[in-house]
Image (tube, one colour):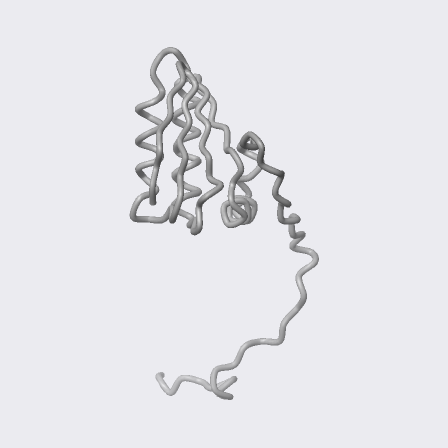
Length: 138
């Protein structure tokens, strides 16, 4: 993962590229905590170059949002990559973040929200044709 920090007065920009996973996601929350000093900033997190985004990334974003809200700041997600949008939507957290676009970039199509009622029933899985075997333990 690579993080580039830009500051223009109280406005802060964190540009993340690469993988945001369990080995580095905590760095995002720690950085946001450092930025949450008066004057209260708007912190934009550019996620357009993220190639892999895990549940740890969701947790870090939610933690960063909590830290910012407690300080009176705001987190804005700029141009989240499709993998980020998908994981946030799947986790039910996408609506918790305001989204923005970078200058001169066309909007990305967002994945449609899946209704659990649309799920297709699949037959039960069996392992090597051993469906229905019972244990010989008493």
